[in-house]
Each structure stands twice: as structure tokens, then as C-alpha cells.
Length: 38
Image (cartoon, rainbow, N blue to C red; front, side, top):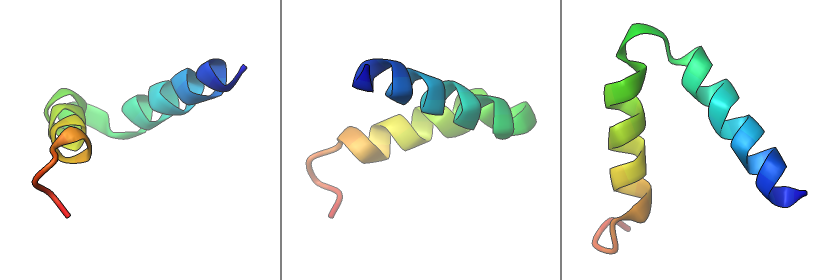
């Protein structure tokens, strides 16, 4: 259930970002998963 909600949120955010969505999404993934970012 929670996985479905997270996947839905991720898809909606991806669709909202427009033309640069692949690059922006890659950047967001990198920032959110990097241990050195506070």
C-alpha cells in the first residue's frame, strides 16, 4: 500500500517537471540519497 502511494507520488512529480524532468529527477535522487548532503 505505502509503496503504491510512493510510486504514484513519484510518477506525478515526474510528470509535473516538464522538459528537463529526467535531469532534474536524477539530481533529486542524487541529493536525496547522498550521505554527505545535510
